[in-house]
Image (tube, rainbow, N blue to C red; front, side):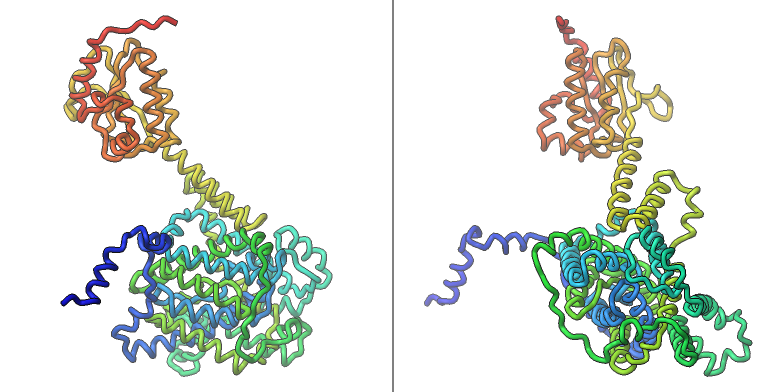
Amino acid sequence: MVNPSSSQDQGRKATPRWRKPLLLAGLARLDLAPFRPRLLDALEGYSRERLWSDIGAGLTVGIVALPLAMAFAIASGVKPEAGLFTAIIAGFLISALGGASVQIGGPAGAFIVIVYGIVQRYGLANLLISTVLAGGILFAMGLFRLGVLVRYIPVSIVIGFTNGIAVLIALSQVKDLLGLQPASMPADFVGQIRTIWAYREQFNPYAFGLGLVTVLGLIVWPRLFSPDGVVPRALHSTRGFRVAARMPGPMMVLITMGALTALLELPVATIGSKFGGIPQSLPSLVWPDFSWEGVRQLFMPTITIALLGGIESLLCARVADNLADFKRHDPNQELMAQGIANMVTPFFGGIPATGTIARTVTNVRAGATSPVAGIVHALVLLLVVLVAAPLASHVPLAVLSGILLFIAWNMGEWHEFIKLRQYHYTYRTILVGTFVLTVVFDLTVAVEVGLVLACVFFIYRMSTLFRIVPLPPNSEEEPLPPVPAGVAVYRLYGALFFGAVGKVEDLIDQLPAGARVVVLEARRLISVDTSGLDALVQLQRSLSRHDVHLVLCEVNEQPMSLLRRTHRDDTLGQDNLVKSLPEALARALTLLERPVITRVS
């Protein structure tokens, strides 16, 4: 008796493959990255000791993130709650779904200049749309295993735009540091300087004093509690010293300066006076106005957010890997988590998010062992918003500007400018060029020009490594067969690609008089592209017009594979492609025996 189900199975197996949907068949062939958050691996064998350690680290990072989230949002031209909601939602999603063990996500200083420029030029609604689109790009990059490509961006470009962003962050805080209140603040470098100069008469010494004390406090505070600090060693074992030592500097100045402003009723702008405070509630779902025309003009801002978010998140994950003995991060999973976070957060009024180096380093040093610490950090911020949001109304904007000035100084790698003389002029050109373009124009232009310069210099450098050298005289170290008269032998070194074909084209003018056969030994030729192969074919044709033959020997696997795939081995002649130099010289003797054809011009 035939089993109906088995016959149906056989029928399904016999279904022709061409009847399957083309899209599904195409996706099946793609090597997509698996979606597996690091949290799943971290929870295997998770102990109570690790839980308490992660809770302690999460509390510490949550306290550190509170003033930074508000400061980043205000500096970006949005309300402070947008930064808090981003730190809560994006911080939770990046930790829960990311590919790193201890990375903390949220609003970042690197985004300040970008977000402020988008808000000024396109409006807040378009910023939210651009962030969602950038999140989709980040997710696709991770899904298609493109996380490794971010590592190909030269370090000179990263240092250049990082230092440029630090300068722009510092410049954007001068307004609040001096207590100026212009009607609007331009996004460009020159416009900001003009505005600050135009409103210089509004200088507020109280605001300047608060900002200056904030910067000094952030510098001095860690040194007070270091082993060699000014606090007597006898007090190091007291409870008060241990509690104060654990208090992050930004939170300390936020509390003390906010209390001082409220008690003395200083005439300075605060979060409450400018934004009306922070809502003591959960964020509500927001649906931004969407139009195709708006999306078309957001192409470059979207690419900028995606590019910067990917670079910052993977750089941060790499820093975290080097700080402690954690499992190496998965760049593709991290990009997918960053994408999800940036696609979800804008619908709750958030701004772009990425990995944050300062908070991640704090998380590691506080004893974090898994992504649970990042989840706790997000819950701590949520609790603060629900319980203590009204207290933020008393925070002076000058204090937040002082915090950001301190962050901008620590963010920049200023020592790299001092070491520039040690590097090649190509490195100096890319770094300084990217830095200047970031400050004067914008990050998108700087990265584009920096990548173009890096490619041009790389092509030039690679072209100099390709050489065509005459066969050296015979020596004991390298015995060579005798070269017959009328034969010129050259060795090829390096990679023959489009940037080096000029050297092949010039070879015909360098041949010795009476040469009738040219032998190219390609043992040290590591690769050839189609332009290089075409140059060899053109050389063979040019030589044949002068009754000179071309023989190649010891061709490596990659060049030979390209010759065969393009059928250029037939063009050059199968007999003229030999395995060794002695065989090439023997082939040359055969060619020398052929009569010379006199061409009549």
